[in-house]
Image (cartoon, rainbow, N blue to C red; front, side, top):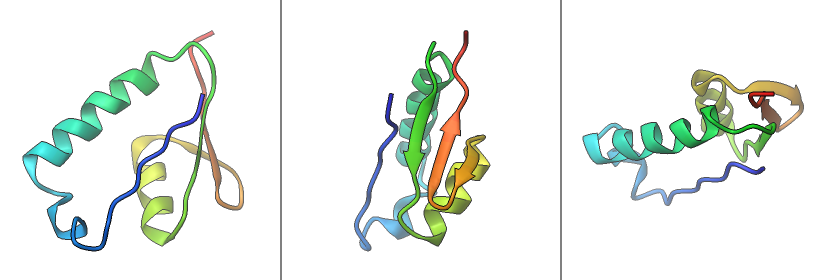
Length: 70
């Protein structure tokens, strides 16, 4: 399973707003309930920071993994 998100420069100042936080929380519930590993790649420094904050483990370089429920 792959986890992907992207946003424009204009959206960056809105990431802390309630609607964005609710969307992140909803998607993370899907990730947390996955029965398989979920992979993601960070495209920039902010992506690395966010994936680590969400609980993903850095595997190599830009690649991160969330360990699914086995």
